[in-house]
Image (cartoon, rainbow, N blue to C red; front, side):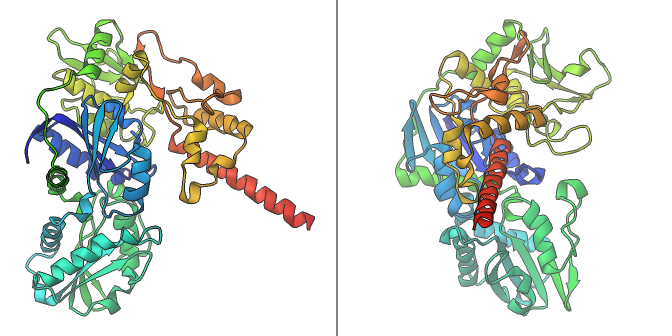
Amino acid sequence: MNSHSHAALIIVGHGSTTNPDSSSPTHLHADSIRRRGLFREVACCFWKEEPNMREVYEMVDSDVIYIVPNFISEGYFCQQVLPRELRLDGPTTQRDGKTIHYCDPVGIHPNMTRLLLQRADEVAPHVPREQTSLVIVGHGTSLNENSTKAIQDQVALIRSGHYGFAEVIDAYMEEAPFVKDWATLTTAPNVVVVPFFIADGLHSFQDIPVLLGMREDVGAALSESGVFHQNPHQLQGRSIYYSGAIGTEPLMADVILDQVHDFDAKHQVQNPKGMPNDEVKSSLAYWLNSGLDEIGEILITTQPDGTYSLCHIADRGKDDLQVHHEAHDALFIARSDASGTFRPLHSAPTLNRGWRLDLADLDELRLALDFFYPAAIGMARALEQEKLTTVPLRDLLGRQTGMYRFVNTISDDQAHALIGRTCANTKCLRRILWPLTATQPMAGAAAPKTQPNHAPNAMPLLCIEACTHVVSAARKVARENYEAKEKEKAEAG
């Protein structure tokens, strides 16, 4: 595709607060695209991980931004949740001097057919297609009728393309035809099952194998077990070949680029000339020259040759550290704590020790810091420039949907208390900047979290919107309120 050296690319994934495998493909595809140098900036954001969709804008300087959802279908999330969270009002949004293009999700691109066929051949090499049933598996949901359309379209394309399979069917976890009924849905002696998911997370790596009969229980996550399922599996007199999620295919990076290319063609986008200033990077350089050499739990050392070294503050002066040399290594250093437990909250004081990260220049440093503490540098600069926008807690709770739609029914006192409790439990290092409402500041147990808490030689970690931990805590309190009222009604009458 053509170079977009003037623009930023933001890839949006679902993410998870419990499974590190959920966001891994999105990060890997972003890194692949970043290395090609086609975009000025490449960043990721997530629904259930950091950075969230409000923070990610502080990670890019570019005046033109392309957003590609790394989602399978254009269902509930892509049509409702993402536009709401990203503050989009159509295919192209003009806001704060920036032009934001919202592309189609990767899963509906025609080139997904090629990836499905390639994955089927890889998982069952030398198995004759005419003796093979191909099963494409999705989640299925009643929230949006488009949730299954991407899979049904792929099934139709492969059937009409006469690719030689004995049969091609779609199956789902939560709606008919059910994947658990694979044995009655298929007839060939060989069955290739390809999960039409973005990541080898809970559903594709743990749930579906149980539904197929490959396992009796969900077992450990892929990142914990370290090995994928061994093929073939002999079940009910047939051979089952089970593949990794289609979203883990490296060529998915090309599909992301295809969606940008197709957006430009469909909307006749003209690439402007000229480059904006690297304002975030310039601020970082200024702060380093001013003696700010810490952020969170990280010490930044500027070397005489202009390179940089990062380590845990507690490892200051140690020589026996494991040395890394790529900014992307920060993503994996920050992924788990010392016990190997996943760290969905990067600003928790649980960063692992025993490492040193040597980086060649300021670009690599900025990227690494965004892996360690997503959007922290951009938010600090925006605050300094008095341009940082925060989201009042009531506004955040008020836009929740689904099982979280009642969270805004909690009282003000309950909100203050649960924030103080949640922040204390996570020991989050961020300073809360958001108020309860546009005119009402945080009070009670939440008030101390709104005060500056960083050392004089440290860059601040800031919180512009309540995290998923707060929203989950609010849901728990709202549910307890509801149950208490129902109990009162029952006792009264």
